[in-house]
Image (cartoon, rainbow, N blue to C red; front, side, top):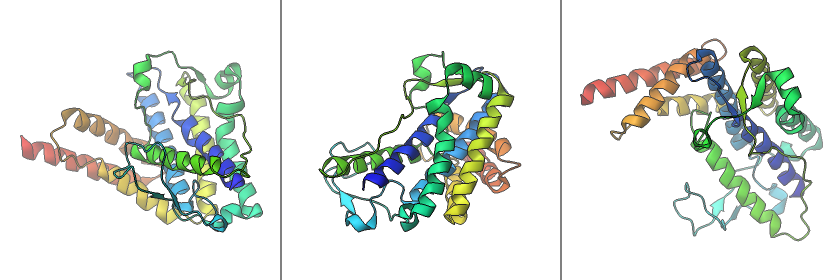
Length: 275
């Protein structure tokens, strides 16, 4: 259980650190494309984590569910037990685990270990100087609920850990959520995105999760084109996000780009039909 928590904690550093990157200029299209690409990688990593049960206890513990002490907003029945997803047993195989750890460390280490000067020099990122309001509800992934859902499952695992007196997590120097970064050099920051993409690709292939990740990504993107309510702000926000996704994924993930275009067309058709 301790090792499973430590791995989930490292995974949390990865997905949270990606979410701490912001554009610096509102009118910079290249920055918008880059943050959209970072959002794609964050989403792929979150889907991979869900697919392999990264925040679930090992089967050997016999723990399959727990009642959350602090249920999140996504929990429709806060007084009932939440079930953990099925954990891929390979996560607890030392041979596979080391490969997973190495890849996750590579993703998280720029945000957790580099100095401010080194971050700027290597990846063109500087400390975020924007308004705190900009950071509220900041989500790069197409489906903002994926990160929230992971946070709830990880907190549940944390609660299980504290209830086991012999379980002891191996804490590492994690990401500082109070410290965000803004893009100052798109070319250098793109190198960080490439590093993350390569490591996510490796993890997906290592755990045979390609089909599941791609299917879930297409679903998330298409879901952005469905707006049952007359929420103009949500429609405008998702329309802009979809148009960026079409371009951001066109070369590396053409199937995501196609899904984004289909969703964009759907939003347009809905808008025409209601006006």
